Amino acid sequence: MRAQTHIDGIIATIGREVVLLSDLEKMYDDYVSQFAVKDENTDERCAVFEHLVFTKLMLHQADLDSIMVTDSQVESAINFRMNQWLQMVGGDAKLIEKHFGKSMAEIRKEFREPVREQMLVEEVQDKITANISVTPSEVKSFVNRVGEDSLPAIPATYEFGHILKTPIVSEAEIAEIKNRLEGFREKILRGESKFATLATMYSDDPGSAKKGGNLGFVVKGALYPEFEAVAFNLRSGEISHVVKTRAGYHIIQLNERKGESIDVSHILLQPKPSVDEQVKAIEYLDSVRKVILDKKMDFSKAALEFSDDPNKLSGGWVINPYTLSTKFEKESIEPETFTTLNKLIPGEYSTPVIFLDENGTISYRLLFLKSKVAPHKANLVEDYDVIKNAALEEKKSKIIEKWVKGKVERTSIKIADRYKDCDFVTRWKIN
Image (tube, rainbow, N blue to C red; front, side, top):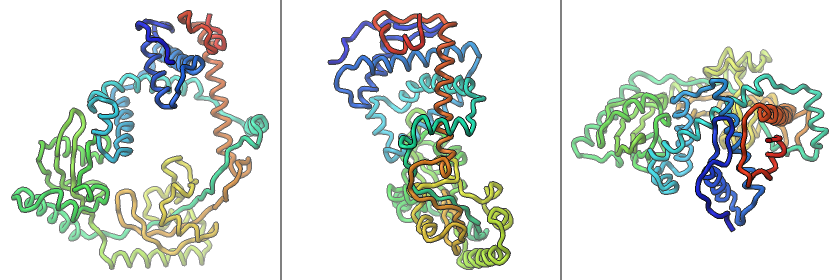
């Protein structure tokens, strides 16, 4: 049985902040939906209420400390979230609108204030824990307290670097690409071909080519800035001239504008180096590999001297974009790279292999395997950083809990009688 519906009203005040019954009901309904809760649960409702009171306490502190987040920061956070949703549903904004029962513009408007509040809460928490760190003895104490059996299982991990060589693309090739795209545009405008047909046949974007070049509905921040600068200024049905981005060269067609999002299609052509230039890149890397092995050069020094990778100043190591560390699990390594790495032993170089970056640019590279760790239970020798982060997060949580209790003593807080039996009211000593 769900709780009986009440007339909306204030159920908590924290300084000048208030929690409404409707706030609790909405968040609890979301919780029930997400975790498939079947029966009314007082403890779970109290946990949701605790989160709301905690949030308002943090917002009260943000106001006292004059902490602010700008509209552009909020918009960027909303764009990131909405773009994640669009990726999950294959770029079909209509599915998102159907799920929420609102237009994309209405969804953005509804999320604006919750996102702002979340960012303010994070700013306050960061300020409270800014100078918190853990010592090696604290990390060891953390392991002793939770027990080694409670430490997480660590999957196989790989650390590797590369020395990159990008073949030169001729100006003639670039000119040819631009001419082809302008030719496509003219054919479409004359009615000799359809945009979708040409995109399917010729576009170098495999994801959208099979959809006739369609990228679906996107919001600002989802695409390359140069692309968006043109796309958001097109009229419905209009086709742009050639636009250059890091991915290559495009012509763009605006299909529909809906509030702050647009349904857009494109044809992408990527200039490719000639076979001769590709052979030169492979031969260059072969000679580099020989020099490194003959001279027994340190990998990072060799990467700095020979690699075309602009990130080589970090030592030539490849960074995991999901964790921002140098460690990769198998699932986060592209299959072709993993096949090569799995044949190497730590300290060994591969022969030159082809590499396509996130923009589809053709390069070749030597892979260097730094380490390969088999699946195992987390331990202080191989996984110190993982355990250290867990210990740090626990320490931060305790610091924030202590801060909350101190803050409650100095803040005017009132809780509705029917919620005074919630655990956090006693734990925080709310009078």
